[in-house]
Image 1: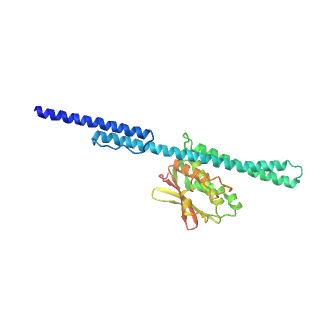
Image 2: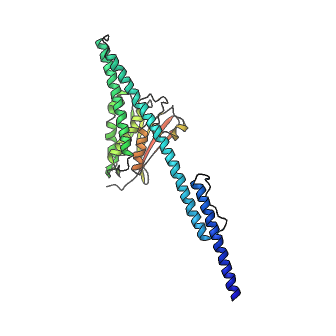
Image 3: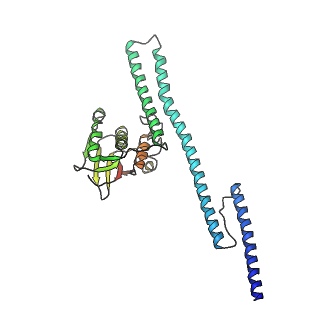
Length: 299
């Protein structure tokens, strides 16, 4: 019995020694990781269940820290890019407006020239107003306390009303809308103003960046309703689809076009907040935007 007790005590002491040694080793690994000397995760020489669980939790925490650092770097980069793009987009119309105001101060202009320059300055001012409104809208949507006003919405009745608001603009651009919508009632529990903004942004994008007809259709699937907007997009490539919804993306690389590149980003952000999905695909030389919402029971 004495021999057995001695063996047990010796085994316990050896185990305690190995545990203490492994704890010191874990401490050194954590110290090197925190000092940025290594990116290696915790590994064990002495395998023991409790230690393995501890090392596993520490490694999970390391993964979370690494993800947080990556997100911070990406957010900082996006913020810098946003500031740069905002500065560029605001500076362009402001410079133009200032230039025409300086021209109007000249005494050598005819009345016809003055009217022309005033008209151009007004146009640039409206452009600046659109930019500021979109930047403000983006800041509101991305704020932590932004909430949707959820209610029962008959989307089948709402879409025609939205499209009617584009009648004059479609005529102005000599565009044709080919519309195919279901006659039955389709009810969603969502934010009506958010749906309007999404559809308006998609239609505006189609008008500004394509030629030819715009196809608008809606269909009910088993558990979802899908709104599709299709237009010609010969200038797009499959690689563009990966960045189409990026903040400030625009097919006009010089950023001298009419869009800020925020319209599609805002549309997707709103779809996400509505627990929906906005996707894009190329079918031949046509771009198809698809908004998909979960379908509620009809009332």
